[in-house]
Length: 380
Image (tube, rainbow, N blue to C red; front, side):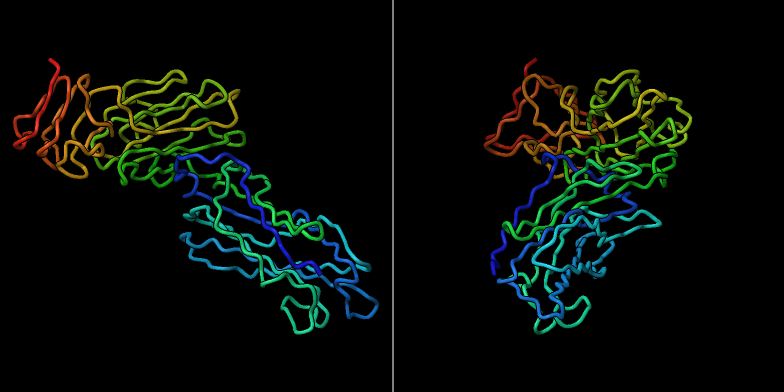
């Protein structure tokens, strides 16, 4: 019998460097299923011992979503059995072997692994491998590495999509599909408990987050987001990847976001990118649509370096650490630099280094230290 199993794993969407924190926090249901099972082992390789030469094939599938926050390890959701006369069979059982539904949307990293046991059950009609069973896969179960589910199904209701193949030459293989959907009630209200939360977007330094969304089946005209800044940052909010004239506006309070009043300038009336210099705090985004504008869009938030660079000292006192600047980029001779009094660390240009800026504005209560053997070049 051919017991050499070849595994090919691939995702169906292009890998990108953005984090998808918003969707990950609000998954309400995840499913896996076998959408195609093919097994054709010649009788000479696998001679069943059952009366009547009935091959009772067992497919036991398990899933692990660890290290996700729900803490589940390998599941044991039963097995799929197929009895057939003859040497092989081909079927499309659409056997769902994993379902996780959260009444309160849980946090999940979207990283899943699956493992599959396959054998011909000759003794007991259950889902445990017994002595005397034949044709089990070599070296025990076939286990995938953790793979992140693609974001093409980030919608409500969700849809089934192909995820990975477990391919065993020409004699056996299994097609696995995934399904997941977002909580349909998240993002309908502007209060922080209900919004899609990016949380602290500069916790690891320079912000770079996004949210893929399908508003096709959402009844509300507005979708609300919130994010937190720990430090003064210059950011861009980008809604250019969208189906039509969706509008995005930024607000300082949830009440203003809910009422659509007093948005932080610049006010958005089109699909272009808006840039903001923001102090630490919690902010709210409202994405508005008309009845005619539905479909997939991507809301992105990332660092912007088109305006003045504010020193925030979020990491250290080092002038040459880009995370210490609101733009997440080091100043150049064409950059206006502002050192505000809110700085947590006073900037230092260390010995042997040369700082640059076009102009520099220093608050009376702050200072810039230029050590011996260091320079600060300006262009004014």
